Length: 211
Length: 164
Image (cartoon, chains in turn cyan, blue):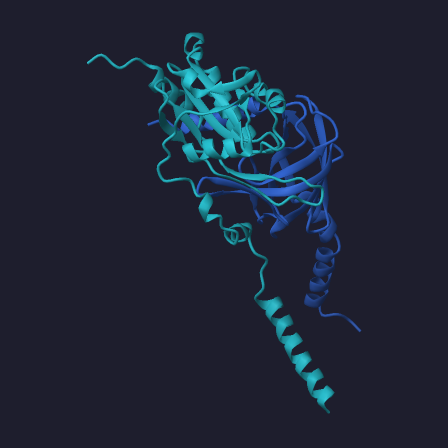
């Protein structure tokens, strides 16, 4: 008798579940999936201060302090990035191509890897010039990268690897512009057009307007 | 025994409608426009394919899967711009609504090609097989394009929009 009651109860519960699934259940849209994994601490800092740093370039250490008098563009990305980084770097490259030769000598663009585990200085050297011959990739220890990212308000988070051990890295996709005094002047949001990037560079290259 | 004329017409129409539709409709309702694969620097294992999928049919369709001999695996992905954080996520399907089109474009939906079997050069053609939820498939060839080339092509309408 007890077993029968239990069976009936089980059938009722299962049917209810089935009805619920059929009638109400909808797979989560992607936005909900990501919303379920918040990384509150990773939110870009409210007011990044910028500042000097030293990272590894293809020919050894590269220090921002050595670039006073130049406008420096910083982009945080990684070479295994399938879409966002190539898009952004192509936009930056197109802006660089729009500069006059005399202007170009006063501009330096750097790709800082947020995936130092896979991106060696050599790997970056293979990758960056594809977009523009003057684009240079910088790497460092995870701690060094984290410090520079925090200085500039960039954020990133490696995702869990798949069965093949591959992982993607979520990351902010702004381009930071450092003026000729070494100060963080502005950050250009993701998908800024070459014209917008070019205008921002020129604004900081141009000598102070005569009053 | 004779059928009522209306019934006869109805029966014929129904038969005509049901028989050819499931096979014919799926092959003609979807079209792929402007498919390309982005060229990436040498030694880069992953890239993405982009295109516009148009659905001229009267029912919603879903792209469920993509396959290509050029890559070990192909996955459907999207990007979510979460307050400036670009989060790439795999999706189960990409919907193409009835009488509408869905764009697979940089920063949004794309077919991610993982573990490229060989470096892709500009001008190469990448075969892709797309599988849809009605059981139909599409075989297409996507041209490999440098990111710069693609940018220039998409830049034009933006300039037009900038007029004051």
